[in-house]
Amino acid sequence: MILYAFRRLLESVVVLFAMSLVVFLSVYAIGNPVDILVSPQADAQEIERAIRGLGLDRPLWEQYAVFLRQAAAGDLGHSFAFNVPAIGLILERMPATLELAGAAMLVAVGLGIPLGLWAGLRPESASAKAIMAGSILGFSLPTFWVGLVLVMVFSVWLGWLPASGRGPTTDLLGVPVSFLSREGLRHLLLPAATLALFKLSLLARLTRAGTREALAQDYVKFARAKGLATRRVVGVHVLKNILVPIVTVIGLELGSVIAFAIVTETIFAWPGMGKLLIDAIGVLDRPVIVAYLLVTVTLFVLINLVVDLAYSALDPRVRLAEARA
Image (cartoon, rainbow, N blue to C red; front, side, top):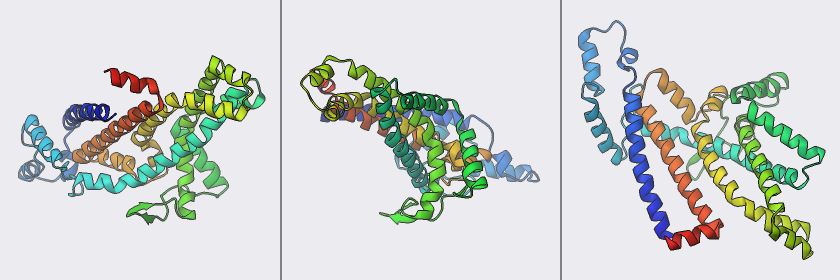
């Protein structure tokens, strides 16, 4: 297990290096932030000073070399717009995004797996058909439309929940979170539900398919023939065996929730990394854009590493393959 984790860690470093090159070239080759940051009335000398001050007068390869050297020391550059370290802006907004993503996945897992399990155990029941129909809607409805409808219904018409913002926060081990207060939970509910809908539908369908497949296996039939209680058959022989693909999907979808929460954060004015990215794109704040993308890629890599290790722990066949390798 230790050797496998070390090998995956080395692969992750290579992926991060490759992605840093792709991200840097794709962002720094587009547009000119001086056109946005400098006043239109500025003369040629002022524009030249701004270009030198931002380091944009150097060749692209030299800019990348400087960026890579600074990134190795934990410095991803200074924001053009705020003149503060870009990584500081990202880390300041990260708790809000992680809280939103965590709440969304908690809703998706807490509802998606039980609903999928129910639909798989009783496939011909009206409730199972309703669950599957609802999952199709969850796949089909655009996130921005779901968010706007929820705001219209629960904030505008009913007035039950706030339409925007994060609400009051409470420090938990030095990290500001909103779920520890009633008002914070009210602000969290709508964006978390919006972000969770697609993932909930995916997990429900995946769990149902895995349950139907597991019920047809000989080991489940043998367990039933031994007279084991239905709860034990489902909990030990069915659920345990379908957890491997489910854990994999949960890990991958958690990464996608963190990376693609931009739309939800924009709709609900949630002060997370995605909202910061939209603001940075508006002024071509390249260091912030690059920092956001690299932090997101790093989170993806770490989540995939954890998923691989969990996969190895859940499936003995993976451990056996590692030992042979």
